[in-house]
Length: 335
Ligand SMILES: [Zn+2]
Image (cartoon, rainbow, N blue to C red; front, side, top):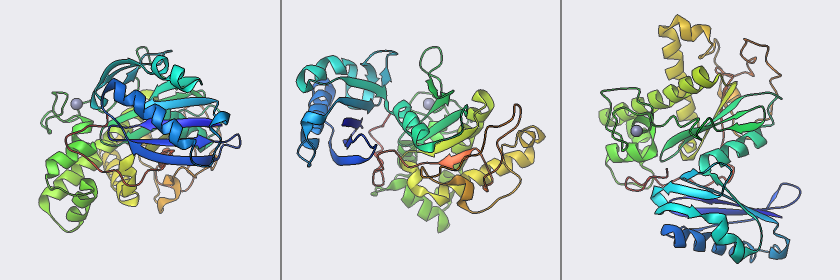
């Protein structure tokens, strides 16, 4: 049995997975702060899984996804700012306490691998997973393997500025994709305390609130920009949308699709790339992680055939460890 952990800024999700690939146990606990706190959280999560009707003696390995940069080929986490971790070799700290091997991966890259495994896409498909959460980042799978780029930053689209006059980003630039469409930024700019600020903002936009409508337009424009960048730079076949914001489901998909359609309307170049498809149906081509339809290997130079949706390469996915709706915190960033 294998254990998987998603260590987030405020909570940690844990699952135990049997040889059949099915989840045998799962739980959630609060994440403790700082390197010592993260180590205690990981050990406690594994211990509690062993109290949930599965035999901890059968645990073979632990895979940990967490924010921050994981140095390639190592279990060394650096700059996990919202966990209070600047430099931590997690496996070196945890393995002696658990007695089983521990692997560590950046959380978005781990989710990318999970989305790729669940998608069962055609051989040779290049897939991008765009994580829409408190922050925004993407992972890319090419030839069945995670593509990290030269220095591990491939897919870090959140801090690409797409509007020099846009809102100030926590990175110091203006108009970053994350400043337009990240959950933390939206919550901060919306300014109304609530359990799920982004959903509240969307509801207010539907009701005609002008501030909310402007924020909603930024959200859709930011996500669409991220999708365009992934398609145009990495030439991916599929963009899978995931992360807490996908709890907005149809409203998010429709808004992003409309934004992509609009950009294609204005640009023959984008239209020629089929960034926005010619026909629109209901959510058919934009289904969740259960979507296992095969589109067939695309011919060189062509986009994959539509599976019934307006953007054949745009899919959405729930997180592999489907969480309840994320609570956006304007003060603590997930990434
Ligand atoms: Zn930024």
